[in-house]
Length: 406
Ligand code: EPS
Image (cartoon, rainbow, N blue to C red; front, side, top):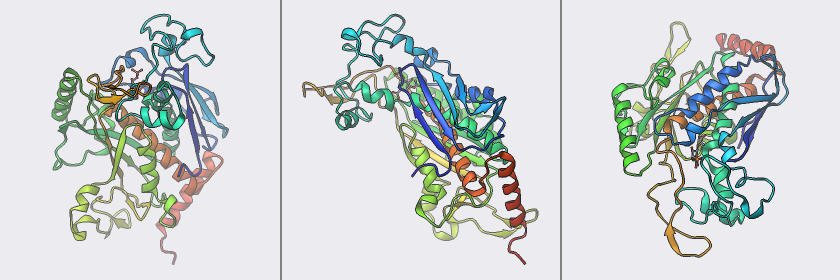
């Protein structure tokens, strides 16, 4: 399963010269504010618990196709994001063979290709399965692309998709609900969309100041204990119309498409739609959202236990998804491993990394949800120009106001 109307690809290694992205299928005439793309890139880089790499990078997307004079023109949208750390890795990551690997020039001096060869796979990372599958004797060939550095390109794509969605009144936000043992209480009221929009003020992107403090403390103690932490975050989409996705075929169901997109983010291991785990423990009479006659809208839904979807489609309520991130697999106190060359038991390789990247993952989650919603909107409303998409969308809203036809 992938996107149905949009096409999106990324390329680039974590310590290569740059990341590349292409997004094709957005209509012409969508206003694109490139500064907003860079602002989202900055949001992804922030978050308490990030490592030294984020002090080196300063992500900016350079658009090289598909956007002209601040608008999409219908052609594939393409961008480049430079890896500033590349200057320190030119020899090790050279596309041409280098003589005995050469020597790094400055800064973080990674050393020669041979010195930087990785043969001790990290449990929990792609290293071992990828090395076996792709037949690589340097596991760097796997980790460079498995790295979450790639998510910068996803955020750029999401920032473009988000600006298209806003033309249809749809907005996406996120907030962190757990870091390690520090979490919002299950009984706490849902975070409103407006509150989620304001969480960038928090160092861990958490809506409750006291929980945020506990999260920061948890990250500090994980850092001191040479540990890493995972957690959970919620993505909320507001202004979503009825009928994105469909019940008629497995690969058109929106829940499945959202799950695919979110689980494709590095280190994410679970997605919950609405309070799904709670609903599983309840009788049916308590787990669903009644349909009542509304005042301004014809059909009112007093609760949103379904998390915004019923039968593979949106029903007009806020979309709410909780994503579960595992603790990062790069540990400074390494787990047991086996050297792929000698076959001897060893400690896994120790690499520079983050202690916690849950706040950043939430920003990436927003981008992936924005891409899926943009895709579902174009599937539903079509359009080669924004004007055409809008006209189709408004016609659909009018039709729904007169449902059923009399
Ligand atoms: C990552 C390891 C770290 C993170 C990186 C993801 O990079 P490095 O090995 O260069 O220290 O900082 O994340 C990013 C570079 C980023 O932009 O988010 C990993 O192994 O996944």
